[in-house]
Image 1 (cartoon, rainbow, N blue to C red):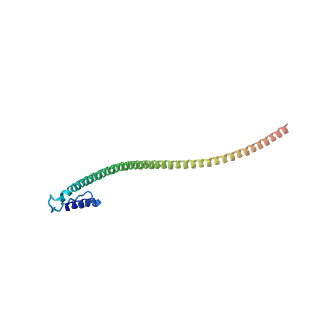
Image 2: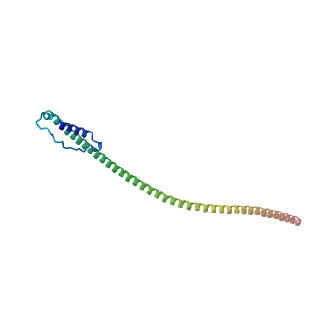
Image 3: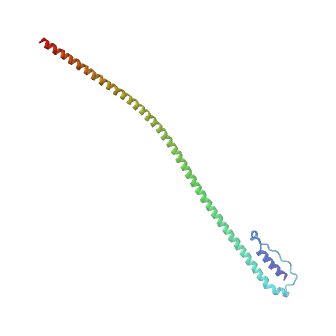
Length: 181
């Protein structure tokens, strides 16, 4: 009977183990039975002891099944984590490639911008020179126009003087011809 009580306590102890030690089983040896095997108590408790052994076997199978499930879950979780890590590494490489391409594009754009700035500076210098030439040409044209106006005015004065002289000369020639006649 002590043996039966010991097995019950032992099974109850297995069911109430801590969660951290749920996969560890400690099987203790039972204290030696002081009664003889042929005693009446042993015969009455034989089926109960056998039932306890079956319960213990079921409990061990249940714990092994639970441990196998936990291992399977852990492996699946580890595989998923590795797959996600590989995917993240692929995305990282892709992002790095895109960044490198963008940096190359920016460098190319900066080089083009430098070229455009150089062409712009050259064009601005040419425009400034052309404006200076245009301004000088405008001044020369104004000067030429003023000189032409002055020359035209001088020509009119000269024409008027010549006419006046011609009229005087004609008038004197007519007076001399009338006096001679």
